[in-house]
Length: 105
Image (cartoon, rainbow, N blue to C red):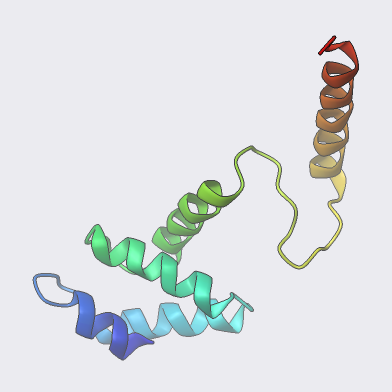
């Protein structure tokens, strides 16, 4: 993945192979989906951003926001929300139900 990224985006940028490889390896070690990781890397390459854990997080946020609008989202694995996320999702569902019941259409 590192080689493919550098072949595509290294020209005109100052990407360091070791840093890119390390960041990709860390992301994959954290069970990041390889397809989503590649989309995040493309986002960084197209905008000439450095490849770091922090910039990957911003790229993931942008990618995920495009697919699932809103603040509270389900985990991709189908894992149940817990804590504050679960409370916010619950109240959002109640608000949506009340809006639907109050809509005369």
